[in-house]
Length: 364
Ligand code: UD1
Image (cartoon, rainbow, N blue to C red):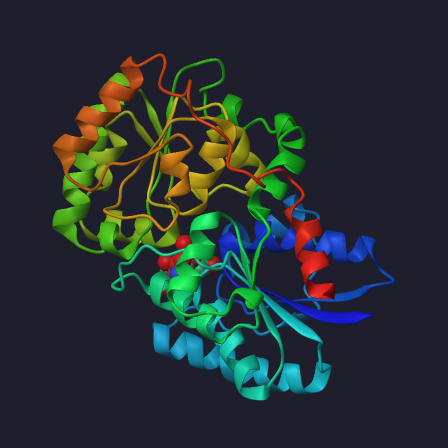
């Protein structure tokens, strides 16, 4: 029986751990899974509601770390997590994605000689100004098992000198959660509540520091989004960081008087119900590039690079950058192109069975 500490910290972690935890629970003669929440995200909207929507139990351990600078947050997670590992003596610690909780917990284990498995390994944006890229490279360098979502991940890891024996292509576990919850999300009334049911609309998310922390950049993006919203109303569930910047930079009134509907962050099921009905998604998120590819929804990624190139090569994603003119122009082209998604495919192993393959890989 393998004792596994499953680490969650921030919003994009919950939908990756949920199917893995459920699979471990199903195979109870093989696994003893525990959930450790670092507390990197702590709001009801950014954390608690996801546990409810995804049917996850209250975490077995909560480190209550909260927000702080990157150094302080990472250090605090390490300090709180080390005694947990020493006390629990797990066979594996499983980390997902690229947030500060991922590298902090992996580093604790590497120093203690406890085995770490990294889910979503090998993704690279090649942009080291992105905090997540630093977290990805470092976590992969010290993990014992690298579970990749797509073949580009395997290639990236091999190019960095990681032995092939540590790498296993398992597919995209977020798609397990997506496929499992799509039907359940149909009971959400979010489209009705936002008055977009049966109508054409776009969905926008924006929270990368590089997009929202500088007034000039954010202002340029907003101009293009306001223009797009004249053609197609936009619903914009805004991350706490983004909400703060909108206030701070004095954009609130302009947005309030536009066709951009600014709302609080949504829970997992409400958000799925919302984006699954959209004509177009505009985003700088990592996960949403994948979710739109899985559902065949056109997606414009408002970034200069992506660690998820397969969503462009095979799926419905376009890396449009942050130039306001280009964003506007591309959005209008995509909206006019009725054939845009015709040739898009779902990447191999994005089939809802990734959690099973992850569990199998841990047993080897
Ligand atoms: C983190 C991840 C990012 C991920 C994002 C998803 C890192 C380096 N970044 O970024 O990869 O895409 O989560 O949301 O780990 N805040 C709240 N309530 C919360 C959490 C945060 O109000 O529950 C506010 C705080 O003011 C905080 C700010 O949001 O200072 C930023 O939060 P933080 O977790 O530091 O980084 P994110 O920008 O959320």
